[in-house]
Image (cartoon, rainbow, N blue to C red; front, top):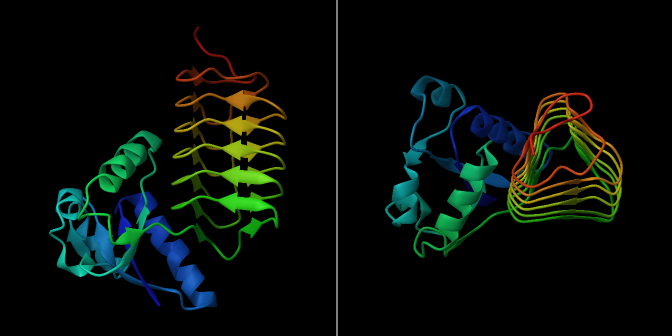
Length: 221
């Protein structure tokens, strides 16, 4: 059993706990030692049977006794900007990260093709589909029932919300956020840090940093 701590205790953090529980239900793999978060709801956390270990500052400073030994960490933060900032902070913090690593977590009901690469800290939730010749960067969130089709590239820290449909040969830049049910038609790119609104349909390249909404998706230039 590998020791695991979840960073984040909000709704997404508790969903990641569900992913870990489902993995362990198939084959015992992780021993969850607790969650690291600046704010917690004690009642919701107790209902998940999880222990609050301390804050992110505590982790970065090496003050968490529960993490004095090698422990896998997962960044269970829904917002890609916050997730990116935390990853950079912890990876450069010395005592908070040096003895730890970030595994890719895949729910047993998700399907992953044979020619797929998942970066460190990727979370693939229940019902997601990742097909073939797909490369997914570090700390990416592929949420419930999202689909990533053939020949796609997904940059570090991107978030694919529930029900997102990414068609073939799409490139998604680092830190991009695709809202619930968004569709990206084949061959287009989503720029770094761009936001695609819920239900939007992308039929052209989306520049970095913009917010694209509607059918077809449009944005201010």
